[in-house]
Image (cartoon, rainbow, N blue to C red):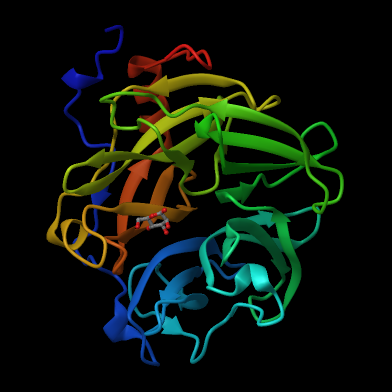
Length: 324
Ligand code: BMA
């Protein structure tokens, strides 16, 4: 084995002592659970989480929670902020797992989320300036596809979307390009689920939107291990070329974060950590990672971009599609 990450002891992410930072009891209206939140910093420096809220029918919508420090004092919208569109069959069973990207060219936030209908999960897009009114583009990539986020600027003149279609080749991470955010092509697989006993065998997906660094796009992705008592969702790291994000430069062999605490181990879906958003601290290095715990509540863990890049330098390796 070429990687030595099994010798690595320092933690990449540190859990916040106030976890869980948001749960169903905090909600201003009756819900079942709140988890898998997108995150962004607003112009005034406050944090907005766009949370996946599951109602007591089992269907999800998105609801905004705002906080000055990103940890507590959340002010939660009194009703759903973005609800499934009743006119769209693709959203019949709800909308889930948003990712937010601020697009400076448009001066708007792009919210990419999973729309869930009888065709399966697909990728939908809405643009907003204020998280009050939304310009809905509908389903931009058909089922079965999810775990998508837009890159914050064009690459070679085209918008770029990372996503996770299910194809006969499996559940791998892809990138697609578009001239107008509506028509998508140049579909390219960029990171493959491994096979066999690996922690990220058979099913992987993008977690929060990629972080742009001088060394490339830093990607936190989830891997799913199927066991005889259910699935285990854990997180790994990979780095992609800044100008050609379809090229994976390095990928870690070991996971860097997984379910450990009771909040993460027990809930509606046990043994799940599932981040859909992060904010970057004023130092330009601290990552505030917001993750759903056991599909039941929202937790926060902190990491460092520099430390993740160093870890990939030391423990990551080049990967070749189809060969791992
Ligand atoms: C995935 C998504 C997530 C969920 C996870 C664990 O497929 O649906 O929303 O957190 O499963 O249930």
